[in-house]
Image (cartoon, rainbow, N blue to C red; front, side, top):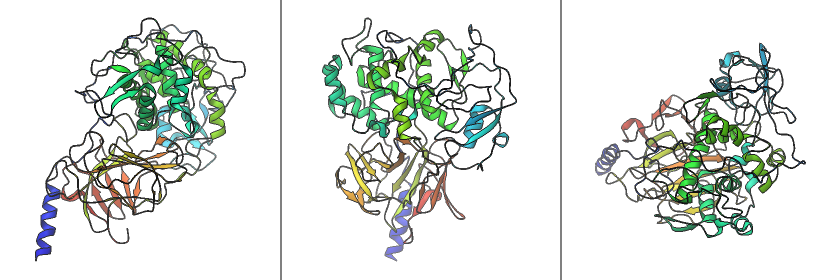
Length: 538
């Protein structure tokens, strides 16, 4: 009888947990921090759309490109853009391209049938290939697709790729890169730049880049090059006209200083990259309101840069910024060498036939938890909907450190532990940029597994809490990366835990877990439909 009463009390308690979910600020910042939905980004141009001292070298390898309307394969080194349409109302120097009924496109890392169809403005059923195509899962990189030329005559962005995905995200090409060493050897103002963070105290310029790169999984080389491009801080003293309060040109009083300015810049990069990945971004809007369709064959890294520059630059300056010979990428090459050489050595970020390893639910057998957050942003609102939230039964609603344990969903090495985060590296090489990585958030300081620990599946990681970012109730937030890219929790590579498969809902945090004929519905209020108890065979 006493046991039955205890179980009933636990059920009532978990039903009373309100809004056990992540907030939008995972970065730490200067109070007050606006929500991402209400933060207003400026439309003023940053200082200096190009670095006049940067030139491309004659040893650069050809940059891959895709020309819409031509029967050529996409992302083929040596291709060149022969026609670039300009947005409505802007003069174009492009030559006309003959309309073709069907074009050939070669799939890239991260492509899925539905999203490719969105990029090319066709139905998935209209895309054909000599290889089998599935409506689910990734299309293997290098697969030739034949697509109706529905966008013929539509003005698009330049179709020439300017940066590979592996140089946009914090991927294997960043392994071994010494951020403090590079900053110090460059000898610019960045060596003496400091920011005060309310959560960690004073950060040097190099420390801020490390923190931003690790959290967002954006390449530190890209961050350094963009800081140099806008300010000159990396290699020398400030360019004329640089506002040291709004150093990257974002005139927002809630985001002063280098670190917070980087945060806004990274938001734009993430929006472009993962918006293109998900098919939710198909056009750019310039500060004057002009719209321009994104060239459908571009890679996500290129779209991220095009999007970021379009948020602050008018069309003419934007074209200068993305020019592969004289724009930002020429400076990038002068600082770090040719990114396409490294990308070709690495290969696609998502290799052919990529599958998730076997993962278990992140809590103990028999313990009562709730599925409080369906697929939602893995890191800030701009990343992929790659995270799931689980909340334990608690004696009282709200925030507190639970006695429940969060478990390792797979074996591996703990490569980061602190500030509410635990990062599990599955391949055990000690690098967060390579292979499968699992990120746990809101892990309490008490009993948190230390960095360097080797764990087996089911080993204890720590206790769920509200530590590490904004949270409305005690829970654990869990997300995946592969080769540095955040992986969405639903299709085409769904998050599967003990056989429970995650599915997207009609909005972030909504969604379901399914296993056979069983369905658990995500709910931040931990309703009965969201409750889950891990079974002995799971």
